[in-house]
Length: 143
Image (cartoon, rainbow, N blue to C red; front, top):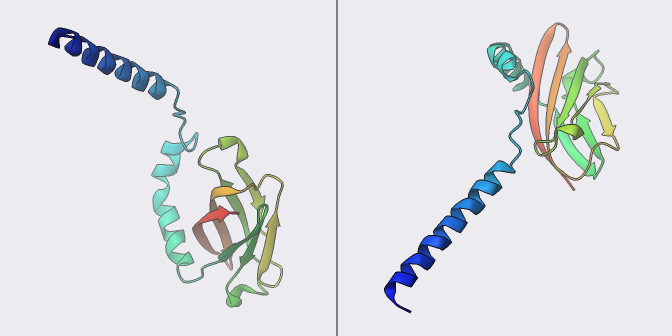
């Protein structure tokens, strides 16, 4: 085999490799994290203030098993009226995202749902107590 055929083989391998990469790129999911991403970005200053409030009152999140999470509020909020919601976000599958309302039962709450499967989740806890709003984001790895 002379050098001309070797150059041709290398060129053809390069072209096949490039076509394979182009095909794989077109098969990737490119949906946005949220449908109203730009509106959320404009309102981020309010979220930042809420996150600063939450830095002094963090909620402890502990996965119990593959479809349950245990939440524990700070002891200052044990017997106080808390309103808010939990948003479970699955980065790899938008259809698994869901939101539930917070229920404070002596500073604790257990979330169990069939929608909550094993894998990586982002949990957003948005809550208010006595007129002060809090926002906390947690990363959970469900077993």
